[in-house]
Structures are given as C-alpha cells and as structure tokens.
Length: 263
Length: 309
Image (cartoon, rainbow over all chains, first blue to last red; front, side, top):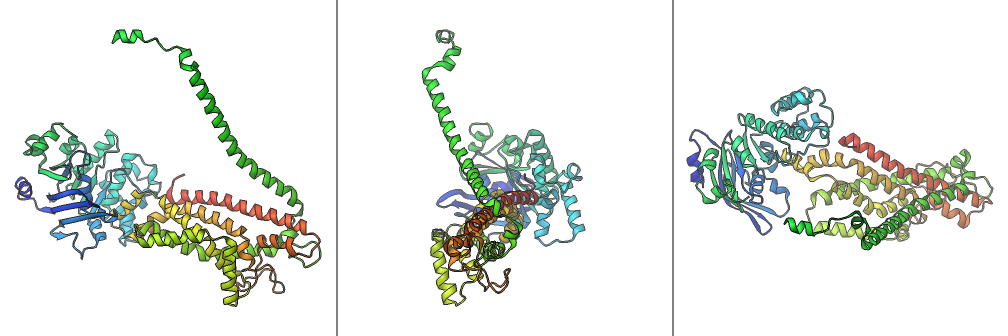
C-alpha cells in the first residue's frame, strides 16, 4: 500500500506525515489493522469508507486524541516531518499544537466569539491584547467568518448558526498556527449551504496547510480532495489520487463501495 | 389489492373513540395523571402549611431587638443576635475548609481518575463518610477537638466537625457539576494543545460554575441548620463576657439551631416559647433564603460564564 501511494503521489510533493503499520485497539478489540499511509504536504487527503470502518479511529490517532480515551491503545509509527509523534520523548500537548482537529459537531466553548478564537494562543502564552486582536482577525478572515461576526466579537459563540460555529471552530484551530488540520466529518451536521462554505474553505486552506478529512460523502471527497484513501472493516484498503480512486480503483472492494454496493 | 382495501370497513368516528377497551385505558390514564399531580401538589402544600404555621407562631416575636439583642440569663426579652452571628461565622469557617478540599477531590475523581483502584477507594470513603449520623460525628469532634486537643467548645472545633460531615455532599456536588460539562469541550480544548490543567481551569470550571455554586449554597443551607454535630463541639452557650459578636475561633459559639435546641432544654428565662418560635422562624427563613439565592446566583453565573440561559 505504501508503494501504491508513493507511485500515485507526484514525486515533487513531499510527505508531511507518514503512518506505518498502525494498529489501534479498544481494549482487546482491534479497530485498525496495520494501516500504512503517506500524507502529502499541503494537499487534501480524504478518508472514506462505510460507517464503522475505522476512518475516524484512524484520524484520531494522528494527533494522539486516543490518549484521552481510557482503554484505547495505539501501536505502530506516525511521523510528522520524520519525527515519530508516539516516541516517549514527545509531549502529546505539543503534537496537538502542531496538528489541529475540527470535530464532527461544532463544539465552540460557551464563551464569546473572540475568546473562542484566542483560546489557543492564550494557553500557549500570548498575553498581548493587540496581538491577540490581530490573531483573531486573521484567523476569522482565513475561516471566511470575519465579515459575518466582526461587529459582534463579544457575543456568545453559541448564538451563531451551526455553519458559523463550525467555521469558528476552524478559525480557533487556525489561530494556533498548526501545520496539519484533521477534520472529522466537519460538515455532516450542517445544511447544504453551510456545507459548501466549509468545502470552499478547505480548498483555500490547502494552500497553507495539510488537510486530512474524514467524510461519509463520496461526492464531497471527489469535490474537495486531491488524494483519497478507502477504509473497510478496520483496514486501509487503497490509496490513490482522488481521480484514480473514483475512476479506476484497483481493489474490487473499493470499486464495490464507489459504485454503491455497500455503505 | 383494491379488493382487499374495499373489504376492510372504513374506520368510523365511533371506531376511533368508542371501543370499550380504549375508553377504560383512557380513564385509567386520567386517574394516574391526577394521582401523580396530587402527590406533587402535596409537596408544595406541605411546604406552604409549614411556613404558614411557623409564621403564625413566630412572627409576633420578630423585632429589631430580637434579631440583634443578646440572650439573657433569667429575665424575659432576650434576643438571638449573637446566635445568628455565630451561625454565619461557623458556616464561613466550614466553607473555607470544605470547599477547597471538596472541589479538588471531586475534580480529581471526575476529571483525572480514569477508573482505577484509587478512585474506588476515595469514592467508597466518601460514601461511607456520608452515612455517618451527625450526632456520631459530633461525638467524634468532642473526643478529638474538645478533649484530645484541649480546645474545649470552640467555633473552630465545630467548623471542623461540620467539614467532616459535609465533605461528601460537597464532593458529590462538584462531581455532578463537572459531569454536566459536555465532553466535546474537553476534546476541543485538548485538541488545541491545552494541558489537562488548562482545560479544567479555563473551560471545565467556568462551564460548571453555575451548578457548582448552586450546590455549594444548598449545602450551606444544611450547614446553617445543623445542630447535633455542634452541641458537643461548638458548645451551647454564647461567649458570655467576651462580647457577643466574637471573631475568635477558639471561643465557644452557640448557633441559632443549637440555641433553639437549648432554649427548651435548660433556659431559665420565662419567655422560652416566644424565643423558640422566633428562632425557628428566623432559621426557616434563612434556610429558604439560601435555597432561593442558590438558584438565582447559579443561573446568573451560568449566563455570565457561558452565555447560556
């Protein structure tokens, strides 16, 4: 599988992350079996597959979110710029600083819009008011939300619509200046208009960030991603450029899924 | 298909509302609703009856002099001012000890201890402590603070006894307040590279502050009314001769609730009933105030810290 992914990725693209022989267990249940994946820098990698195939489980291993789940165990190697993020010398807090995450349901803090965006910079030690203001504006602009909220930054984030809340959560991640952004079905709780805004935004984000996105919608994967990997029953079946995966999948199981035989 | 449909008689209005089975079920349903409503109303009725009774008995006693004046030894016309002061004084001392320990241990159990033996041990200890009758706790206080430490009857000894008595409840309150905070906040904060402590301090606690405050004030109401645990620890006399409003934690401090118990038992004053009824009313009103304040302040803080109504 590694060979496949290397052969399809253009040689000029460096790999931002490499996942080697990744196993994930919940107690004695093996939720991911020996997954291998190279993630190209500043592109969008979509993870697709039927419900329960392990794609979200896989994603959460990439910034050590499983550390927070009692009973979850991760084996294998996940490297960011060649450094193993599971090495004993690595602080998981630093990993999550460099690899941000946007969740399935918008989860703004019950604080003001401004406080939500600057939460990350503040906990990482930024105290200068003017700089925080600048970070907030920059992040909200990058998340295509600034024009909608610039006059009510001190209002509660919970007053925003679902789509706005999700873009706020993206702005909140951007504010800590990560290198990789993980997204776990970020549009699944949103209406079609809000979804298309998020998709446009992802297209913008890949200029500066490496985006890995779990999606249950194949159309969405086709629209927004450069590369696609297909998961089934806790295994990573196939990786390739998105157009290859959707037009000439090599594995029979990928083809069955793409053509709607299951899922 | 068309024939099958035609063969089935169309449902009539009588059919929909008239079968005897449906009617009897509807009647049973109404009776059940009425019974449950009555039970719920009875609670409100009993409370109002109780308050009304106390008001009728005690209202005539209440005066500025009664609320601020000192008790007398033998003559009529004594007040309960120092007793009210002592109640608040011991309450505040108790909260100073209880809240930090209870909030920290509750926080540990809820946010840090992921299963494991230590969590079980702490939880079991708290639950056992919660079942100790307050009079037994009072005797323990007597043996430790009064006798072994040679403090005699002191406000501090009383407050420490009350701390032991109320730690479990306060810890439970903390755990429940924290458990009410959605897990998505924790994920979001940790996902941004926050440490556990930053997450607890900046996100979890502010989100839980409303219910937490409500819980603390409700427990305060119980502390305010506690009697048995104080009789043998804080003592049953006001600090005579040292001035009625005494901040020294090593002086005897009779609270309003203990005073109410004591006045009927051994007071020499002729107006025992008057003082008892007045004390009971003051105590009742204070505890009700705690309950109202708990709700109002809890809601205000929730709005302030989370923007949620």
